[in-house]
Image (tube, rainbow, N blue to C red; front, side, top):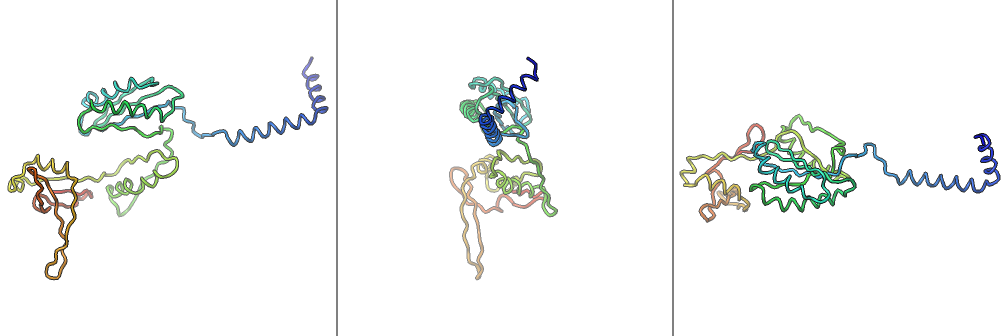
Amino acid sequence: MCIRDRLGRLIEWSARNAFLVLLATLFVTLAGIYAVIRTPLDALPDLSDVQVIVYTEFPGQAPQVVEDQVTYPLTTAMLSVPRSKVVRGFSFFGASFVYVIFEDGTDLYWARSRVLEYLNSAAGRLPDGVTPGLGPDATGVGWVYQYALEGEQQSLDELRALQDWYLRYQLTSAHGVAEVASVGGFVRQYSVVVDPRRLRAFDIPLSKVRQAIRESNMDVGGRVAELAATEITETMSIVKFQGRAMPRKAQYIHRLFDNPTGNATAR
């Protein structure tokens, strides 16, 4: 039987059963509309593996030190994570990255919870003050927008402060945003430059100053003193030395000023 005869019989059967043909056409049309509405579409499909990134900062340390004391303990601990197939570790100056790649079909948030469990047990093998953390729950495909802050009257540290303390949180609250990464600018920091002569005058060792700065979590208010019908606001800082709290005025042992880069420095 040739193709022409088959097409003729199909047309003849369709003409005799018009109701069935219309019903099938309606069903196919509704199925197509449902598929268009419900089928997820992605302009840039994410074909990457399910992975969890463990990021750890170890400031001021060489890559070999970071490898021996941070990357290696974390990598060996992540090898036993369920359903993980590859664990990769990278050491840089002052930073460590560990990538845990899971089998296909693994739920991302289940994988993050498993990595977090093993990370808590491995944290005790790391140096003091080193705290690892998980990366964002997104891959490089999710990098969809990049912007730059510019200001004629603002310095680089002011623009970075505006990004880190205001604009970043507004963008993070937007729907679907996993992370807002800041690059460039000057991160505002505070430096303490002590005067050894004044420390010697007050008989305060440098180790006590470091300890007081590290543990400085005691904030106290000031008071208003009336002097010759003038109100003067005076604040005191509480510094703990030799097991007791000693109120010291700021100008006794250091001086606070703004340097040209905009970073506040204590002297």
